[in-house]
Amino acid sequence: MPQIQLGGIDYAILVVYFVFVLGIGWALRRFVRSSEDFFLSGRSIPTWIAGLAFLSANLGAQEVIGMAASGAKYGMMTSHFYWIGAIPAMVFVGLFMMPFYYGSRARSVPEYLRLRFDEKTRGLNAITFAAMTVLSSGISMYALAKLLELVLGWNFHASVLVSAAIVLVYIFLGGLTSAIYNEVVQFFLIVLGFLPLVLLGLRDLGGWSGLSAQLEPVATSAGYPAGAWSESWRHLGSAEANPMGVEWFGLVMGLGFVLSFGYWCTDFLVVQRAMAAESMTAARRTPLLAAVPKMLFPLLVIVPGMIAIALHHSRGGLLPIGADGTPNYNLAVPVLLAHYLPSGLLGLGLTALMASFMSGMAGNVTAFNTVWTYDIYQSYIKPGRSDRHYLRMGHAATVFGILLSVVAAYAATRFNNIMDMLQLVFAFVNAPLFATFLLGMFWRRTTGHGAFFGLLIGTLAAAAHHGLTLPHGAVPGIKGAFLGTALHMYPSEMAQNFWTAIVAWTSCFVATVVISLATTRHKTDEELRGLVYSLTPRITDHELVWYKRPAALGIAVLALTLVLNIVFW
Amino acid sequence: MKLDLRLPIGLMFSIIGALLAVFGVASDPAIYQRSLGINVNLWWGLVLLVFGLVMLWLVRRGTARS
Image 1 (cartoon, rainbow over the protein chains, first blue to last red):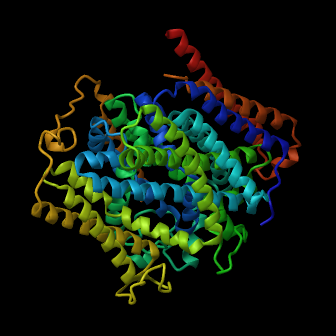
Image 2 (cartoon, each protein chain N blue to C red):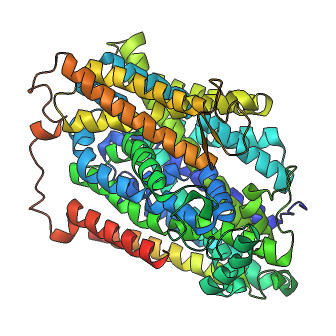
Image 3 (cartoon, chains in turn yellow, purple):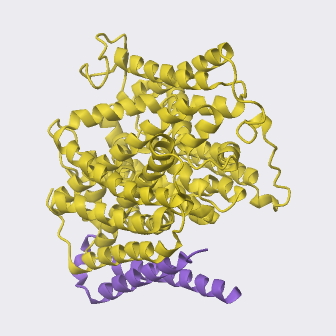
C-alpha cells in the first residue's frame, strides 16, 4: 500500500494530545502521598471515571486493530466477542464478585487469593500475571511500531521509545490515578476519532442494508451462505457453515463462559480500576457502567473491518495481499483511514490509534507495578518496610516494567516463535483460573491445596489438549499436536482454543473439588468472612433509588444485549 | 475529586475541534473528494468543539454549586 502522508494539522492534533496526557500526569503528581494513592488511587475514583477506565484499559491497539481484522475475516460473528464474550461476565463481576474484591480490602487479585486460600496460590498467580503483563505490553508496542512503520514510514525505534517514554512519565508522576484519568481521555478520543470513519463508510455503502448486500458476494465466493458476514447467530448450527469454524456450543461455553469470565472476572488489569472506586456501590457499578459502551463497540471496531472487506471485494484490492495469498486483515483500519479521511480527521484517527495503544499499555504497567510491589516484593523480597519504601519501589517498578516491555518488543522482532510460545503458555495458565475463583467465592469448603493443585492440573490439561489436537490445515508444532499425534482435528484454530479453555476449566473445577474434599480446611469461618458468599452479609441497596441499584443496572444491560443479539441474529 | 477530569477533556476537545473547524474552512475543497465531498473537518470539528464546550460548561456548573 502507498504510505500515508501527514500534514501539519495532523501533527498538531497529535501534539495537543501528547501535551494533555503529560499535563494530566503533571497536575496529579501532588496527590501521590502514600503507596495506596499510587497503586489504588487512594480508593477515591467516582463511578463514571472508573467505568470508562475499566473499558479503556482493555481497549488496547491490538483490540482495535484485531477486532477490525476479525470483522473483515469473519464478519458480524465477531460481535460474539462483545455480546457473549464480555457483557455477561462484566455483569457477573459487578454484581457477584466485586463485593468480595472490594469488601475484603485486598489490594490486588493475587492478594485476594492469599486471603482466601494460601501463600502458594497467590505466588503462582502473582508471578505468572506479572510476567504476562510485561510481555503483552511489549508485544502490543511491537505491533504498533510495526504498523506505524508500514503505513506512515515512521522509524520503528522512535515509535517504540517515544510511546514508552510518554506512558512512563505520566504513570510515574500520577500513579494509577493518572493512568485512569488518561484512560478516560483516551476513551473519548477513540470513540470520537473512529466514529467519522464508520459514518462515512456506512454512508458510502448505503447504510447497514447496503453493507449487508455488499458482503453477500464476500460470503458466497468463499463458499458460505450469503448472510455469513452480516448475521451473528444464524450460521452457528455447524462449524462448516461459518468462517470462524465454530459451532454454537463451543462458542457459548468456550468463549462466552470460560474465556470471558476468566478474563473479566479475574484479570487484575481490569479489576484494579473497580478496586480504585470510591465506595462499594461505585465499585459494583463500575463494570456495569462499562458494559453500556462496550455493547455498542462492535459498531466502532468491527464494522470498519466489514466495510474494508466489502470495499476490497467490490472495488478491487483495497487491502494488500500477503505472501500466503490472503488479504492482510490487520491493515483494515489504517487502509480505511487513508481511504476516507482527509488531512485533519486523518490526524485525529491516528491519534485515536495511538491513544488506544497507550491506554492498553498503561493498563498493563499499572497492574504490573502493583502486583510486583505488593505481591512479590513486599511478600517475598523485603517485607515489613515503611510505606514510603514501597511507594519508591512502585516508582522504580514503573520504570523497569516499561524497560522490560521495551525489551520484550525488541525480542518480538527477533524471536517471534518464542513470543508465540510464551503467549500460549500464559493462555494455558489463565484458562482454568475462573474455576478457582468461582469455587473460592461460592464454596467455603474449597481449600488452599485444592485451589493450587486444581490450577496446576487445569493448566496441564490445557497443554495436553492443545498438544493432542490440531486445527484443520495446520502443521504440528506451536499450533498443536506437539505431543506427537493429533487425536482430534478441529475445523479452525478458534474452535481449538475454545475447547482447550473448556477442557482446562472443567479439569480444574473437578480437581479442585476432589482435592478440597480430600484435604483439611485451614481457614476458619471467621477468617473467611467477607471472602466467601455464604459467610458474607448480603448487600441490600435498599437506600438507593431502584434505577441506581447495581442489580437493576445489571438486568437492564443484559436485556439490551439480548435485544442487540436478536436484531443482528 | 482531586482534579475535575472534565476540565482537561473539555479543553482538549475544544482546542482540537477549533483547529479542525478552522482548517476545514481554510483548506482546499479538493481534499474532500475522498470523504464523499463532505467537508468533514469543518463538521466534525464543530461536533468536537460542542462536546468540549459542554464538558467545560459542566465544570463551571459543578464549581458554582460547591
